[in-house]
Length: 176
Image 1: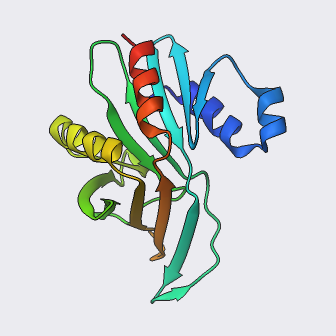
Image 2: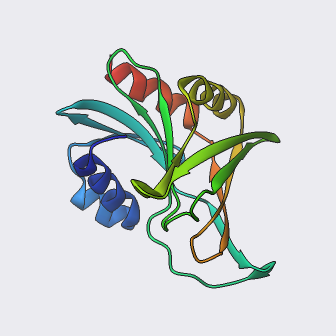
Image 3: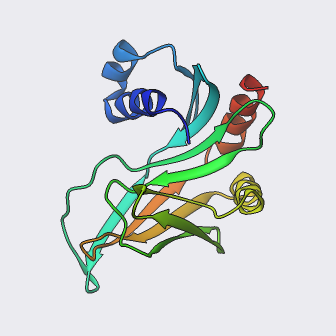
């Protein structure tokens, strides 16, 4: 996972309207490719691409509900000499023992959660799973993440993959 400092800067930049984000931009934001932004951190050296959902649907017992969620962000993080690592924060603590379903243009993957250490985060279970998800995202157009909160709310977040491959190429190159 990227450093807390880097993630907070990223969240702050993505949460602001474009004009405010540019004014508040740190040296960490280095590029934007359509729907994906690229950030870097020097100590420790990390580079990541991140995007937020184009659409979010929250439901309980099959009915739409209004809920308050924190930042919803999908990341791919690179470190020197290492392949990309996928992570997702749903903006709420996931239900204990639950998983997040990731569907990319009909291809399904499972992201694991950790209710004890990082209750708001999910990620693939192995480096091989990270590689498979990355390959699918590079070939895909849309990623849909479906999770369940500790309060029983079902969430469905749709992430555009427009600009994804260019952003990942840039992030990976910056971290070599």
